Image 1 (spheres, rainbow, N blue to C red):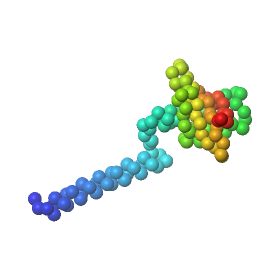
Image 2 (cartoon, rainbow, N blue to C red; image 1 turned 45 degrees about the horizontal axis):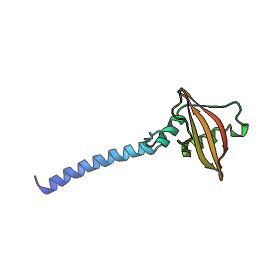
Image 3 (cartoon, rainbow, N blue to C red; image 1 turned 180 degrees about the vertical axis):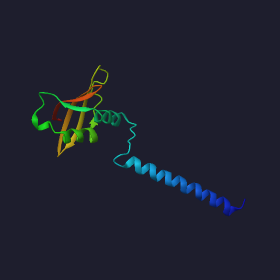
Image 4 (cartoon, helix red, strand yellow; image 1 turned 90 degrees about the horizontal axis):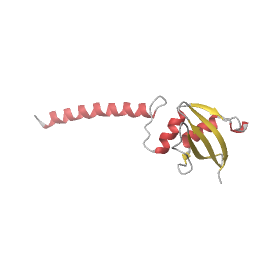
Length: 124
């Protein structure tokens, strides 16, 4: 088999692979795509985002904003040292995030079927 024939088959395979890769990466980064979480912080936040959001009764009205909570659950940092990850049936997580120049901390209870926002307080 000549060099040009081998080069042609190589380019055919390369182009098929590139098309597959472009399709796969576009699907991954799009709105309807999927997200792969390898680190514990990402996995906990993704799990909490997938559940029904509820607010504790004693949470002030100013913090009952779902866009505020979504910002915590997409860009927040879970403090595993403070969090109670071993309790059953619900685990308690402390998530910190800087929002509008203020460092805030969210305390949330992550149950099997829902996520409850307990408190939001300034972080010292």
